[in-house]
Image 1 (cartoon, rainbow, N blue to C red):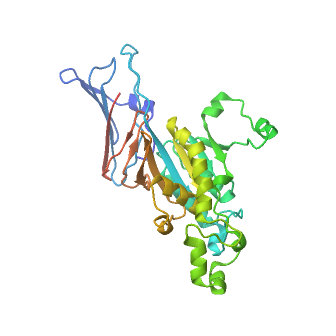
Image 2: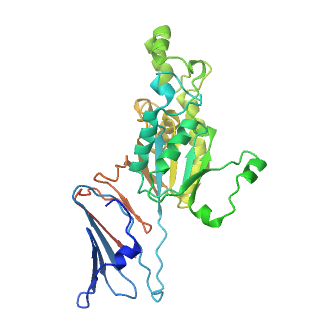
Image 3: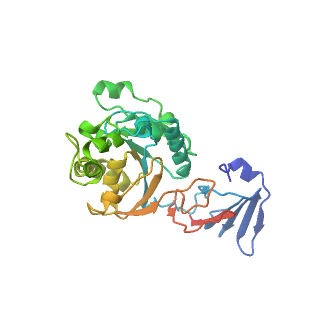
Length: 338
């Protein structure tokens, strides 16, 4: 089912109500809504069944309000989503050059990777976005959000000076509701490769030897000449993650982080409690998002979300996050209590 279900579409269907079993159904096309419990003063259970011939997607169930007499309000979810995305292919990735902290944009392939990443996360709620200060990460975040079904607009926050903050103010409360703040931070930048930046990787290996270059690139605590080791990169990236991003997750915010191979490896090392030896072999593909659930102070890794036209492994509603192990491509069925 490609789009959201409007209240008008639901209202145009013919309901069927049975007083004997307190069951109420509405059908429209391939969608069936099933209510169980007292009606119409307040539904006790709502089931949403979405069927299609070849594809399914996760759809946020519509919360049907009661008449106000029940006095029951939905509980705030105790779970938050954390999405990590390595930027798409950059121009220097394409040329096999050491990039590091050089500010290089995406290639056309990188743009496509960012768009595909957006399709994979289009049904996951996002309240805040964090990116590095580098354009390839920011482009990835913006392109990914263009695919999100809520159609909120990402806006980069400019707090580097009082004047920048004042000039970038938004004075419409309605517009603010339709926006997602984007925080840029140099702490999330790629590892600084020092004197290797701009050099061809193969030529550098020929010059210094494959073993030496491999040690610079993949060891945990050996930096390249005048550059950062992964350990040094982790110190700044993980500290920022703990100080700035974790409090947002604790507050119930759903967060996306668009950054780089080494800064994200550092964060994943922290989340998955990897050793300095284990993180060396950790590889992150460009443009592939990873989903974590933050619950009761712990991070639960969910892997990479799939696109909306594929069988899915999770679902989200405003009431709570469901972790569904298997979704049929023919039928998607969700149930939740209000």
